[in-house]
Image (cartoon, rainbow, N blue to C red):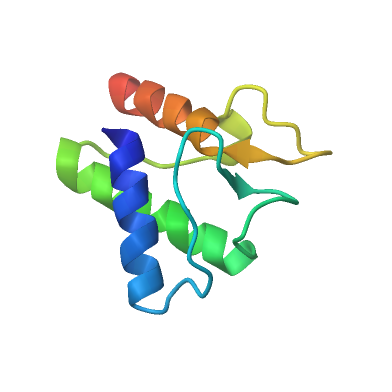
Length: 95
């Protein structure tokens, strides 16, 4: 369900022009790092939109913090959809 929310977010952000490059959301997609189609502003826009959608869907106060994501290494930052989804599932469960 969270991956579907991310896919909807990516699609709508691209359609509205807030994210310039269209990108596919699937488990192995990279949303942050060297292989990501998103620039830093696009990434922040995407994560903020996903966060807002999760708050609306769950009625929980959720705040995404990259450094809280398991196995996220600041020195070689790469974040895939599946890693972000796993983190969001845990975040929702503990909020």
